[in-house]
Length: 335
Image (cartoon, rainbow, N blue to C red; front, side, top):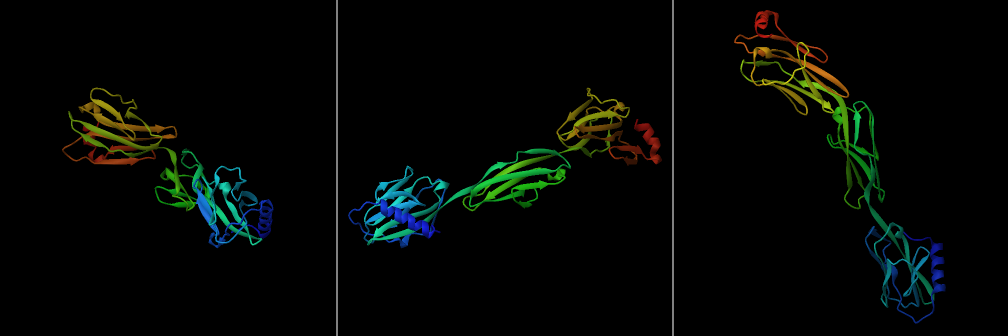
């Protein structure tokens, strides 16, 4: 890749006018210059002209800007220095290369009263880098989510979104999720790459809020004087708050025989010494700012004869009733 012929001719002519006459030096053979030199931003590079022909004048140019005429420096850039100017080598060095240094460089000289020109094109590469990305987001289930990831680099980088949970991949800077479900709550990773350096990667955490849904409740048998536990587990984001009620709707409170233990996703009723008053129906109520759910369960005396029970389920509540066939046992022991 080189400059247009007209620019080359004008540049060479300008140099020949500016160069003062002096003693002859050996000429340069420029066939060794590559067409392109690639360097990373921030690295250094040396551009060389090999000399094996008698010349009278020589110079380095960047586009139409003169850098050196012989040993005289015309460039004001301190990063550009003359490495060699002798009978066999005429080379310049650029320290800490910048993107603005990219472009055509010309080594020109006069040999046998004829201008000679050789070109090299400096390519400056910049590793792909993420410069702007969505912050962590929290949305309610059913809403739309729009994520973005902006990257720069030379050459132009690719941008890919990766689903960490399922490994799905989406190409492009933007990731749109329509009517997000709770199962889609996870970290989404943006990866940008242009082959210059290892990919740059960053993650966005997507939190999906939804109301409580009670997932674990069981009727529990118990012996008088023994311990017993009623469990109520509810999935919810943000985590649910729990309350317990007895069958007459009185809130359950802790005492010396009963303790309530609330954890992140569940609540436990801990009976340390079961008495007759503890048998009955208990309702667990789980709630957060998005809604509530409740379920009922039974603490009953464990019988020597088997008692059957019928479970009746409504949308949010589970009630347990003794089978009519065994009602007489239920009347004696359940209340």
